[in-house]
Image 1 (tube, rainbow, N blue to C red):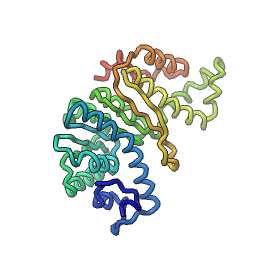
Image 2: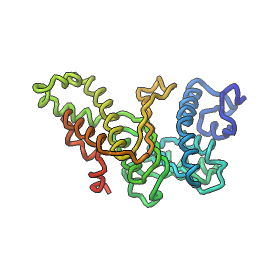
Image 3: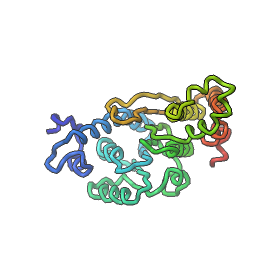
Image 4: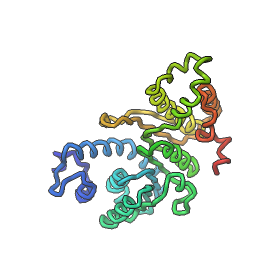
Length: 282
């Protein structure tokens, strides 16, 4: 059966049934096949990061923000963490209490002791004592609007080696562009790029991710941006993977400030803060 469905070796069939990826009689429908394909595709990017951390030390810690039903966390645990004989741990952060409770019950039922689920917002998790002081890998898939930026702040505070983001709907930059449009329309032809509302929204979304990448680079990360193949049905299929390398921060930091200034987004410098502004967020 597993070959027919392309289920990975060692994958718990019971887990896939519990996540409703497989039906009770072990079948896949079209929707769940797509979901499994998406999660596996993402896992392909995350597995080498886990192996990299493992080379450095045992007891890997991974935090998944905006975990929802924790599909990703459970699949990662099942395929990688389950067989580790150490204190490696996955934390799922989610604001909807009923989903947190369901995930806790499922982890117990499957005997996955190295999983915890916390009913917290991403912002609350930054100061929560329920999480370790440092985290190896931070993931945030479709964490809506500013939650992705909070996940970045969390990762920076926790000195994460790897950050994996699939950004979601983001309206904040677009609303600031819209608010300041009148001021810049007269003086700068570039404003035509976001003059029409639909362009404001799309350009705002694009600029948000550009700013996030510059911010991560300004904190010493090497950033790769790619497309999640197989996510064609999702409007947001951009994948950002950041690896901490301790790179020089001067140029990306200056570029970030310049982009904010040129687009009339100076009021957002606290959100896209650089290392020199980090103390105000501690």
